[in-house]
Amino acid sequence: MENTINPRLTVSDFVALTNQTLEYAYPSVEVEGEVAGFKVNQGKYVFFDLKDSGASIGCFMTVWQLRQPIEDGMKIIVTATPKLTQWGKFSLTVRALRPSGEGSLKKSFELLKAKLDKEGLFTPERKRLLPVLPQHIAVISSIQAAGYADFIKILGDRWGGLKVDVAQVQVQGTDAPDQIIRALKYFNAQEVLPEIIVIIRGGGSADDLSAFNDELLVREIATSRVPTLVGVGHETDESLADLAADVRAATPSNAAQIIVPDRHEIIRTVRYKAQSVLPRTLQAIEAIHTQVQSNLGRILEAVEDQYQQSDAQLKQLRDVLAQLDPSVVLRRGYALIRGEQTVGSHIEIETHRAIIGAKVEHYDKK
Amino acid sequence: MTKNNPKTIQEKIAALDELVAWFDSDEFTLETALSKFKEAEELAEEIEKDLSSLKNEIEVVKQKFDQA
Image (tube, rainbow over all chains, first blue to last red):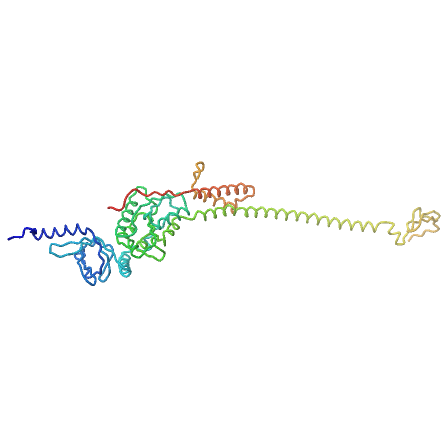
């Protein structure tokens, strides 16, 4: 007699029912394990096994979903849907994966870095200069993140009058790269383009920051029409997004410092400039004062010279006059005779000490 | 920035630089220096006021990015 309690299904129906059940029970699972037997078929389909010490499961995905390179031996976390194939093989259909653990993250980073570097995505020739004193910038970040708060605070402290459009996105986790890509596309499609697109995120573990090593995101940054500035993590963190950006900031705060100058510093400079003209004016006044003093000195000197010269001449004349004074001659013993100098005439003789009356007794010519 | 003077901060800084350069140029005369100095001081004050009062206008865009 047939058992009517258990439904009788075709193989296809059974597989379909199993998949329905799996989909209901596990619409999405995250599984962590080590990659083994990694291969790409026809350049489109990716196959590998995910294993640990106790079990192994086959995984399938397309190359377009493979956003970070993997290879055998790497530890990864896959986001997947379990599925029973029509050949009865149980596998995971992977939607996304990310390296897990420091070693795998580093390995994946190095693999993708080498690949993109070979394509020239990081060459210095591709880098554009950021505009000086932009008036309109776009920011892609999580507005709840500390890094965003630091950025906005430093930006406001340093400068004002900026129009800042902010795209709220996740900055870690599986969805982060796609959200950042969409935000990049959004800003690049605006009628009035921002002058800079800034992508910021504060510090975190290597796993937290791994979103910024996503291949598609790195390519989107590299092809952005608007110049990009990426400030992710701390100074020592390096992401591929940093390398693809036009300018890399060490931290979100540093990103703000790169974009705008410090208004306090400018105020100090402006004050200094305005005051710097005063010494120049005083110097000019001093120069004129010195010149006037010098000219006055020369005039005084000339007058003095003239005076000295005249005084000397006067003295000389006085000396001459003094020599001509008759009393001086008399003092030297000479006498002055007045009256007719003929024999018998009465004459007057003046000496230094007396005036003497006398009569001329004889007169001989020399 | 005032309504009466539509110059941007950069333009004002450039004007101040020009004024300062005048003091070192051959055009310098003591007769004009005082008025130029006053002008430079006023400009510096205006720039300081402008810089101190400016605020950034931050707007979170309405567009959602969590779905394709």
